[in-house]
Length: 252
Image 1: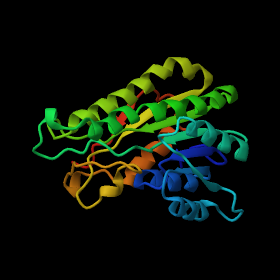
Image 2: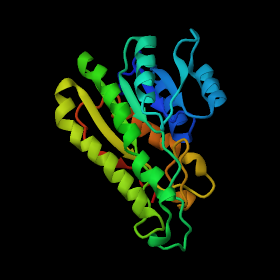
Image 3: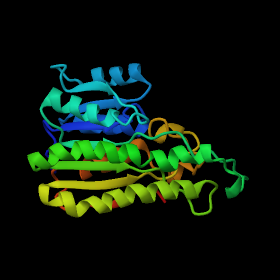
């Protein structure tokens, strides 16, 4: 059996009450990791999940508020994890703002800026801030894993797909740009791009994220599929994959 080396590691999952975030939190906990659950609105859900994952000693998970629109939030969230457990080994950034609402027959030029700005602009700044604070401690300790969950992949030409593509490109650029700087300090960083969301499973988008795209269930990527990819990329078993964006296109 492959040893993922996550026993006792500390993990911060943002967007932890979304389907992807919660699936990732459970998957890391199953590997023996301690998990901090960062949430924006759903405090009760986050605290219930923390109780579920805490284990017999009640100390393997806790919930912590995380506000994407507060520039100071990433700093104190990372600080809370480091103070609670003495360090942060893994960051999974799955939180997103709502955005890219576009009617199926609307033209590109008719989409109001307030509909696409949260997805395009807010996909970058919170991720950059959180990675900045998380990577500092990882570099000092000589080991770390970071995974960013991008907006979902959609077929070319679908309404609103251009906004998702811009957001994905920005996060992919962050991943590629950091490889050379942090790799020498034992930190690997990657991104995971979910496949399209099936019609009957809209919660597969990260917490607070909405999408108008659907795909047949037979080709959809579920939260557990994404969680397994995140766990491997953020494990000790991954010693070489970095700077990549893994697209999970679903079953063909």
